[in-house]
Image 1 (cartoon, helix red, strand yellow):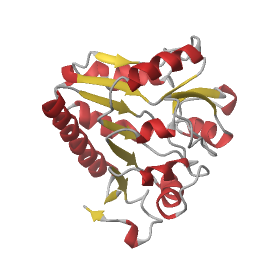
Image 2 (spheres, helix red, strand yellow):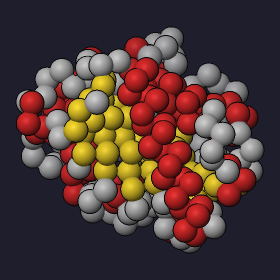
Image 3 (cartoon, one colour):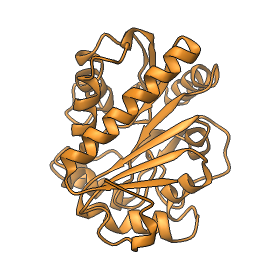
Length: 251
């Protein structure tokens, strides 16, 4: 894993977006299309803004999947990840081929259908983040590291739900759904490349646990260390607790 630290969140986002654009374009050149996974949440705002503004990306050749969605949340709710993807990626680009997770329907069938589409061909690059509780997608600790199912229905722990309130998506924890559809850890790790974007001081402890502690379901994001092609982008705040030797690349 390559860990890159930047002084500011803005510089981190710009570098990660340039890397992501190059990875997409490389897949298009080599295979005629790019299959990507896109994370949502407040931590991805600047990264996705810079990526979608990049004129070098041929979005007409991109197929998009997203990591997760709340069960039972309407698409017009401010916290809906379908709404997020439509507004922050699809609406800003010429991307036409995408599969959005419908958490309002038969979620088991949604998992089955989305999983079949996802397994049809390899994913070129996955964009992910890390939660305050160390989660990867909505795989809260202890995460399932063994299932081969592409998508799961998972229960959200209180730490995860409090994060959603803290980020302003919900007015209180009572309004945060208790379950969600999530891409599984093993499915994320099947991506050819993973770009992990993690800003802010509130992520410093889970970043340290993921990079310096054991690989364990108790820290789901630690599973990224089992992948051979991961670059993690941090700002000074999120990297603040790391030992100097953990940072293999500085910028």
